[in-house]
Length: 379
Image 1 (cartoon, rainbow, N blue to C red):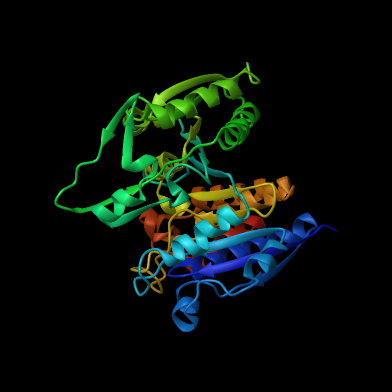
Image 2 (cartoon, rainbow, N blue to C red; image 1 turned 90 degrees about the vertical axis):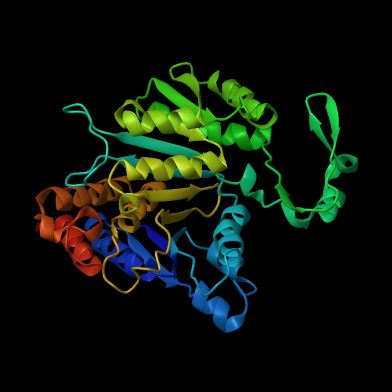
């Protein structure tokens, strides 16, 4: 019988609530599909930071890295300044374990109200494949007095525009900031390769790559050229480049026309939230941070401290993140069964038994119980 060591960081806000229901579903699946899930929970997040004045203790990465997979609730708390938890926990995990691709599926769900009218019989099934370790998320830059910024800038305090050299003139000094977006050919090629393979598995004939190379040709023109190189090994999938602003417009009008969307880090973060918004909400949006070592699975919605403890959290994104985790671990039947259970629950439940986010009245724990009933064939 396969056995998996699952690291769990429930995190902050609604994180512990939704992770509790996700674990409940995992535990219901394990005996039915012949595997074991040994869970080890870690208390990292706002409470740990406030109590110990550190985000992670020494050795935490090594301990977590020994797991088969990591299930994360959410991080973020109004008592903690923006930055430490996001940069030193969430992003640090992605960078430390080189989780270079972020996979965010969004699809039509029964009973989920959507703001876009689709043609009769049409459904939305979008897979955002987001580069996860480069672009503008590398946190390379600074802010403050422009004299300090000017001294920190590379290339003798000059900026380049094409072949022309432009001198910065900021006198008297003003408040200013800059950050660097960096793409590498290995980083772009590996996420493009993953996206093409996923498109092939889904039977897609077209894959879209979303950038803004008309405005930022140095950075995103490089992306476009590199993705085009990767496309040569996948002749059955046609590559279409699209400006990200145009993609946002088209998604809001006809999301059912799109399938796999390959995006650089920043744009992928934004487009995946848009896709979630037009397919039912962030409470249905799962994600997988995949690398060649430890991979991490988390709902997209964040910690939502304003509804923590009210029972209004929707645990389905966390539950569906477990489905992505099981698929990654090779337990495909269990993964499919869990997604089917969520669909069955949404299709068969009266409105009052749906999550608050879907205009229902079922508290978080009740939603988890009903998903388990669906797994067990009792719904």
